[in-house]
Length: 307
Length: 98
Image (cartoon, rainbow over all chains, first blue to last red; front, top):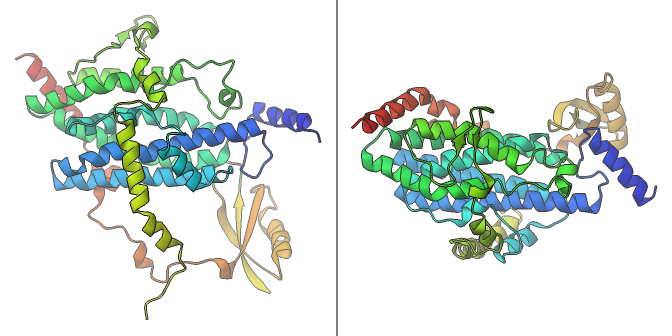
């Protein structure tokens, strides 16, 4: 069979809703596109653990410290599951780690920002995990089957993280005026990055991953689902949403944001790895990777049984 | 003859699941026997056989227990969210009217 015939058969398979396994034939553009997508997801899980890790020592109680630590552990675990799936597409874990710390691969925009206090933990756990869950749930039907199988596990843990984040949010929101001010302060700083999180409008004509059903929905569609789900919840708790301010469209029933109200410049800077915390976080990632070298080496040795 | 553990997968959504064991002299016969025993009614389209002696497990299963002081790892640890949401909404109203 020629390459063109194989490609035609592959496209027809995808068009009919077929799934792809690691050992199946796939066009190079599909393989590389899926690999890059999953690698970016894995990078984001591991980099996403860092902002919350920064707040573990500031947890207001032992219980909060334990639960936040457990969440960080889950996120790092997601990275390991995803790197494993990515490895099967032909890139070694070492190469992925080194591309990450050398700025050659990407991670999600929200993890390029600083955390200031416990209000940030509430925002990350509730709204950022909420946003992540909207995007990840949409991928459960992706054409790349090994990815969907690990996503099932990841989504169910993210659901728990969302409850954890909402619990912290509600505790702050029921508290003193200064506790509520902490949440408002964090919301004000994080709102624009959260809107950016979904990305600019998808170019449906050009998006290969969408055509091959690796992704199943457009960025703007996912952002809309997030707004409809979370804007009313934030408002009913009495908080003020900063620019870009969503408004309720009576006709459609949706909470909308005008495209022209979104300032994309900060996201463009992050794409160049010039976010506020990019260099420091990648430096920390590299330090952790280097100082833990002995752990990897020890684990690679065959087990030695004590006498 | 050796014992082989048989795993099968139906479609692509669920992982391979253990479905039984067969006795066979080698992997080819094990696959053939497993196909006859476990895919007779299209219970799946993908089949694995693994030599039982290649499977490892914990000798002491109490090693697998989760500490009972870790309720934050479970949804049940956050059961009272509805009451908490009401309380937070009340607090928002109270401060707004101040």
